[in-house]
Image 1 (cartoon, rainbow, N blue to C red):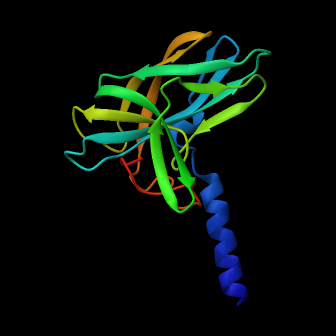
Image 2 (image 1 turned 60 degrees about the vertical axis):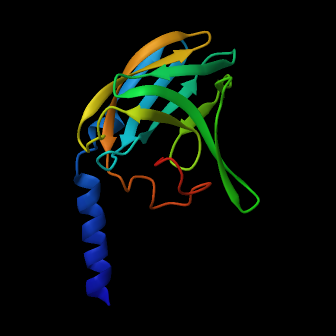
Length: 167
């Protein structure tokens, strides 16, 4: 079995040598907020909704709140939470926005908090990018470029819930 062990090591080293996807390098600063890794999941043609993800770090001493988002790719954008209630996965819009506590990082990711692009104008195609305006209660607003990743993004790890709205 030394051959298999060496093959696994060689593959791991090769993967480490590959360049990072462009979305991994995107970073934005808005006051005390650092916004990184903006990415959306590719959708099937004619899909009415899609999911968007980003990481927000609040380096300040006061809480802030993501209160809305907008993009030309969709009729509207909502801030959602996906969570398990017993054995039932529930998805809901966070009508009052998403708290970004001082000194903490909040990750919008598949299976948890995410942006929901409603009434898509067209499919989100892997490799494309589009602008999203994020609006924070105190820091204000910022435009970020969201790269579209594969439809399978986020399916290789344990999530809070699965299914629903294409997120």
